[in-house]
Image (cartoon, rainbow, N blue to C red):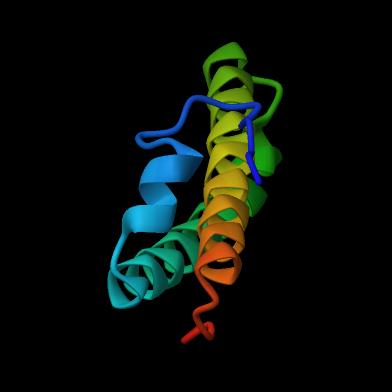
Length: 88
């Protein structure tokens, strides 16, 4: 099985398969926490979206959210590929 990400990622799918399952599970948890905080920030920023700088920050944050969601998917897929049970 292969996976080609839509967003730049710090590792390939093949590298993710080789990660220790505990490391992958920890990274999934860290990313989920990051996403939670970033979504909260996005909600607060939307009040000021008429400001061009804020609108740009919202756009960039949306790209970061998409990339982090994809990374979680990639890590979970790699764990499944290894036959590991998810820890998170």
